[in-house]
Every structure is written in C-alpha cells, then in structure tokens.
Length: 153
Picture 1 (spheres, rainbow, N blue to C red):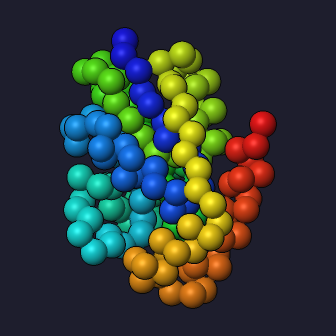
Picture 2: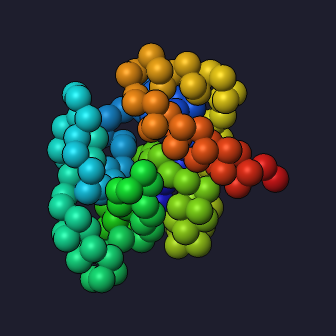
Picture 3: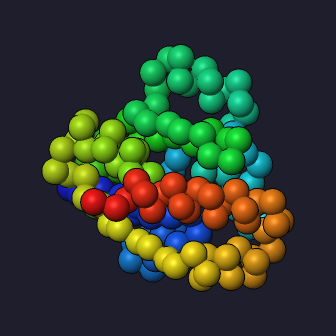
C-alpha cells in the first residue's frame, strides 16, 4: 500500500496551494461538503458538493471515516475513497489534526502528516486579498487561534 499525505494547518495557511504544487490532481482525495462551490470550484474535482440532508444521511449510514463542521458547513472523507486512492498510489488530503488522527487510526503508517503554518498577520492579509467578508475573516482568525493551540505539541 502507498502513503496518504495529510496537510494539516490553520485555515488560510496555504495547505491547498502547497499540495497542488506537490501532487497531481488525480492524487487528491476528494472530500464531501454541503457548502456551495466557491468561484472556480467544480463538483467531483474540488469536492463532492451535496445537500445537507445527503451529508447527514452519509453520517447515519457510516459512509464517512471522518467528518467535521466548519463555518456552519459539513466536511467529510469517505473511507472507500481513501482506500481506493491508497491502492492506486500516493495521495493527499487536507484535514484538521483531529481528522488526521482518525485516518491514522484506520490506516496506520500509511497516513503521513504534513504541517503547514502561517502568521496571524499574513493570514489576515490573504483573507482580505481574496475578498472574504470581515465577519468571515474574524471567524477564521478565531479558528486560526484554536488550530494553533491544537497543533502545538
């Protein structure tokens, strides 16, 4: 079996951009969410965009290995998707530290963490540049502070 590299770090730290440079698009584990696509995002490429009721049904049916809520939306990873990608070759995903540990408990040493961080000032700058609303920026700064506490060993 191959390795799955899990990029872990605060929201806005550049995890997705870094992973996109290091891996081919077909190596990405596509996760599920019930939020609407952002500009330029495509279903089955960036995420599987599904309804809230579909997501909660997947939770009830134990189809998701890990899932969380973030900014009022669900995000989750399918065990079948991860196993399929690992069988084909090395792959990657972007998760929280808790999500990493859940995958690690199931797949062991085939799950490799990649920690990415950023300063709070740089994060604020990136969020402003990409046009996030001020209330969303404040929520992300709060999450950043929580993430940093969780990622400090």
